[in-house]
Image (cartoon, rainbow, N blue to C red; front, top):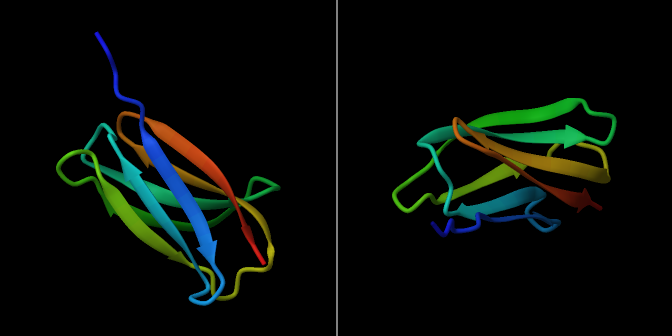
Length: 88
């Protein structure tokens, strides 16, 4: 049986000072979006809903978050995916 690979993209937008997240082909119905610093500390966490087709879109506001490299983690009840991004 062929399994579709999850698409996950997270990028920092300096004009809006936020990280944008897009994902598709996810399993599950709900999850959380987490921003983790490179020392492993949780910086931001917010709940997300997985809509039909396994899609998630969201934003993480970066107000008060220092410049640096961060791990953006999307966790559902069925899987976990991550991507690094840089706030500059």
